[in-house]
Length: 175
Image 1 (cartoon, rainbow, N blue to C red):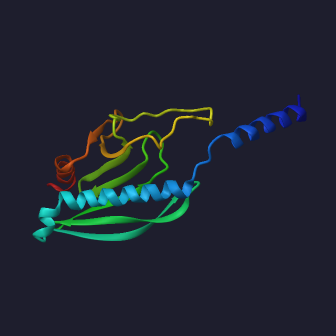
Image 2 (cartoon, rainbow, N blue to C red; image 1 turned 90 degrees about the vertical axis):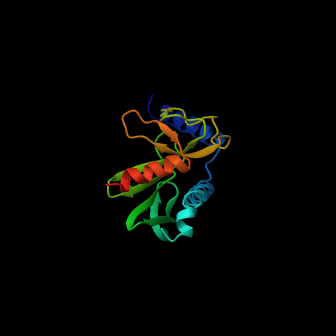
């Protein structure tokens, strides 16, 4: 035992690390920002009738996000004004616990609704703990889709569409 065993351990881990695919953190960040942009486009599409009647207003602000391995970067926060009520869409990030690829929190006077970017077939939270970092499971093959996450402890994912989005807004702004 001792130094000889430590040397062997380090050698094996180094070889394993060299064989495993490297994460392209810049690409992961750029994909997340593209998904965020698509999310905001969906919102504008769903609220277009109200925007055309000047009932809804949009204001984008750049916010700093820091994530381990990616570092600090900027993303757009959306401030939506609807009938004198403010709804804030705050991007949280892309490096999350569980199976989500991104999260945006929608905040209003009555609370918060969480939108998660998850596999299109996912119906609820799926947390895996892996002790082996040589996972062959690829996230590139998944089809990502924005969904509404219900509150814990039994987190379920609800389909996100014009109706469910409208319900979510009403939940956080309706008296």
